[in-house]
Length: 81
Image (cartoon, rainbow, N blue to C red; front, top):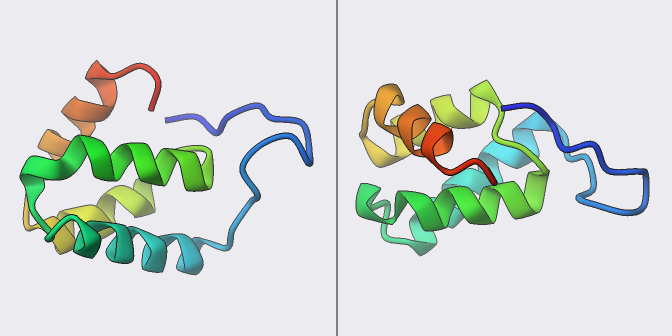
């Protein structure tokens, strides 16, 4: 996914990648680390970071114990992510 094209100060604040990975783990934990909640998790990550980076997908694969293909399929299906 491409980063959102938001003007500085008018969108999600850029966060260091490590902070985003920790945020992804916290968000997933709040949703019970359940892959059935993937869409909600992705929406929260999108809201927080502005985009879903490849390393965030890697974090979700490990945290949710699900496949990269499943995550990328959900991201691809929902254009707003």
